[in-house]
Amino acid sequence: MYQFNVPEVSYSDPWASTYAQQIQNLSRNGFRIAYYYDEPDNSTFRYRVYNMIQVFTESTLPVSAAYFTRRDSNYMDEVLKITDVLVICRSKYTDKLDHMVMRAKSRGIPVLYDIDDFVFDTHAVHLLVDTLQQPRNEADWDFWFAYFARNGSALRLCDGAITTNAFLAKRLHDFAGIPVHVIPNFLNEEQLAISDRIYQQKQSRHFARDGKIHLGYFSGSPSHNKDFKIILAALSELLQSYPQVVLRIAGYIDLKEALKSFTDQVEYLPFTDFINLQRYIGSTEINMVPLQDNEFTNCKSQLKYFEAGVVGTVTVASPIFTYRESIEHGKNGYLANSYQWFDILANLIENIDTARPIIEAAYKHSLEQFAWYNQIQRLEQVFLTNETLQSSSF
Image 1 (cartoon, rainbow, N blue to C red):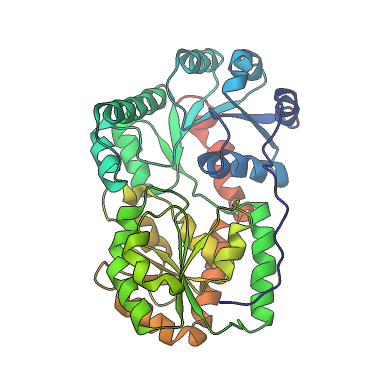
Image 2: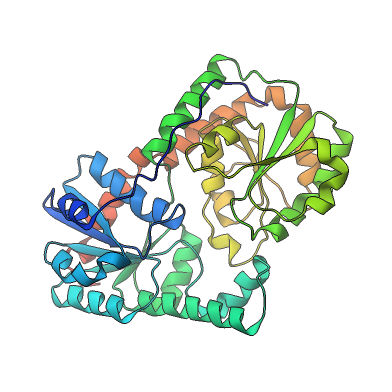
């Protein structure tokens, strides 16, 4: 395990805010972007709303941005009076949302739909259910078909869309027939602050470790058992072959029975917030991202690569679209097909002390492509220099 001395950070959700505060935030500059998201959370909202607003707030762009939620829906007519662009983020169709979009259009305000998953086309419901091993009773099918259909209906109300990668962008365009802009998921200011402290300490200590080598799986969700099974046989063989290896699992993987022979070599981490999660990842030598290869998973972002890269941890990932786009095999990480996991991980375990060039390349690349301050130009191109957006005629 890598050694550093960065204490746990006292954390509280930075997006606890009132309607009055958000109106004030929206009113700061001349060009105003209002985001709408049903209910703030620690996943999509953080990446697709909070992080975007942070770029506008911290940069010198002449833009103000703020978010509004379901609790503010009765006041959105007032919000639209001072709004230049409305962005609806992964929100389901309701009559109030329909009214909000129609009111925006009546005022000549462009409306964009931001979504980060392939969850808007009912033709893909079976992919999600199978990939995430969801229950298949009548109530669950009703839930998923309704969820996809309501997202798709909200999307089709809008003038354009924003998403995380080109693979998902094509699905959005094919489904809705509207222009789609790509703004990737990226690291916010808080993540970078703690990550920089971790990386700089590791670097100053020449990436000193204790006697163990940790393989980390940071799922964060109880629905990734099928992904984890891709590497289960390889992990069992590795734990048996290398007694110094510890498997570190953060999340809710329900496969403890399959690993019961290696109780002393398996570590289950408690749930933590996204800031302190960087400490866990940073102390782990090898970050594993196994994923099934299908149309649903190819729409996923590469966030597990750059969250590890900025704390100096090597990633081995399945070669889905975004990881093929970001990882140059053997240069800034590794790509492993299902039959390659044992060999690649075993080679890394045996040569972890020579992995510094890969660590440094991943760190540099993660900052260049996924730090919040390097997204300014992308956001400017979408919101300020896009002629069709500025003319409000898509």
